[in-house]
Image (tube, rainbow, N blue to C red):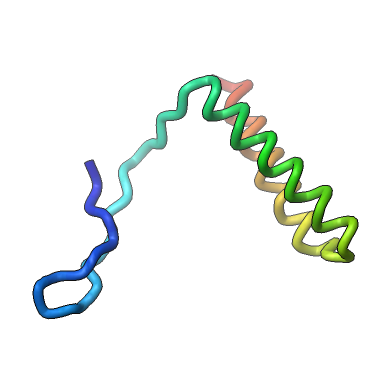
Length: 69
């Protein structure tokens, strides 16, 4: 399990080490997609079109990876 970003005994942040893969259950993956879609809609309504586009790109990447494997 990768290290979590917490404080060492001297108060400094410890580095974060990410794993090679992220494993999500089907429910978690669908939840992530739903959260991205919901957030994108909220951003569009509030005028955050550029940010909504970024979330849309992330959604498409996630969807592409889910379908490919």
